[in-house]
Amino acid sequence: MSPDSIRLQFYGATGYVTGSRTLLEYKNTRVYIDAGLYQGPQYIEEKNYKELEHQPSSISAVILTHAHIDHSGLLPLLVKKGFKGKIYCTPATAELLHILLPDAGKIQKEEFKFLSKKKISQYDISEPLYTEEDALEALQYINIVPFHKKIRHEDINLEFYWAGHILGASYVHISCGKKKILFSGDVGPISPIIHKKRETPPPCDYLIVESTYGARLHENKNFWEEFIKAVQIAIKRKGMLIIPSFAVGRTQTILYILYVLIREKKIIDLPIFIDSPMATRATMIYLDHPEEILETIIENGFYDYLKSKKIFLIEDVDESKRLNFFNGPGIIISASGMCNGGRIRHHLFNRIWDRRNVILFVGYQGEGTLGRMILEGATRVKIFGRDLPVRAAIATINTLSAHADQAGLCQWINSIKESAPPSTIFINHGEDISRNELMHSLKLPEQTKVIIPRNEESFYL
Image 1 (cartoon, one colour):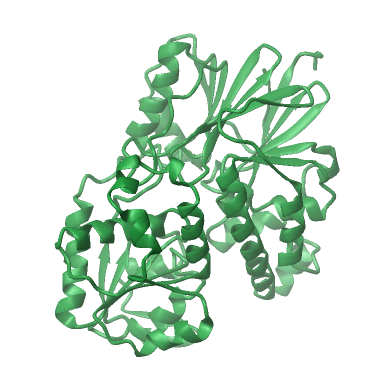
Image 2 (tube, one colour; image 1 turned 90 degrees about the vertical axis):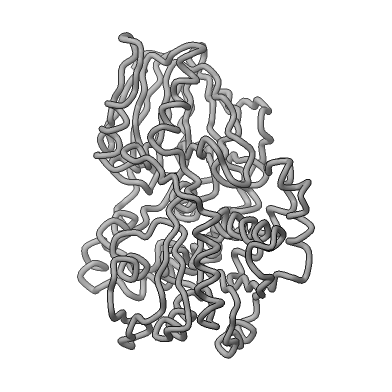
């Protein structure tokens, strides 16, 4: 490796949509771009228990694109194992990490209880990956970097650009001498509902791009009408509309949609309960960052609505339990979005067997999750050890994604090409079918090389 060579090595999300982590080495600098956990079915999550490839103490920084656990959830383990470097991220990402990482620590503790003795022996572990205390320790290493502020870390320069995915989400532009490398993080959609539109990315020599929906085009259905239908069914049945939702981004988008429909008198002003402490705290962070929200949304009174007493923010466990006796009509929004944990399971336990209720899915349901089982038509499901009939009405809306689809990714990549096409594009963070479909859909100059990296594969730039 020559003194001016740059080495990239891919350690996560190669053929998967979670576990993002890429090593960048230049001169005497070794950094990770993102450090995420694998999420999904057990056979994928078990990858988190494999031994780390490097001594964390040899990594001088982690540069985070955004706060989602599949990009940030490995941080407490790195710190636990000896990382003492800097964690660079945008202001809103830092605030979100303060709620997401400690929660991840609690989840790791619970998940360890369910590992079989065979798996514990196989991975030679005797405790959870990390705890809430480890997560709190990791927060001490955060260094906040505003968007468009160029900073230097050892031998490299870095700058964050607005990605339009969730609050604080960015793509990272890194300079290694005269070479420019752009890491996309998760790219937001062409037309976001509440976030400001993603920025045009800067020119680069090398591009590392996600491909979560590289093989899909988002449905073009009218989500406003779909919400109206779901609410009307709940009203007609005099029941509750139950919405499993991710706490960050999706919950706030749903609240905006409901606000507009109520304001325009397309649905009646029903009581709305946000029964997720994490979603409640995330909503407060959204209130602190209007600069990342579309101006029209601020101007039309949505932020005032969030501060009003028309939305019931439930944090206390006893308050949550009292919702079991509220017959409706009304709306409960609760985490987790795939029904694989959190208070949503309690609401399903108490209401899925009742024909008066409606369950509305507003996001992707991963393989093997309770949400996927219900969505695929299960007539009975097991929750907290009890076998329950599925009698509630089931509805779904697939048009609220915070990710760019294939067309959105191609447009984003083409916007770089128009200024100065990268010499090499690495397609990562996606299942192999998505990575290949995106590669074949790109229209690039002949001199641009496209690579689909394998796990642990290295490249010298």
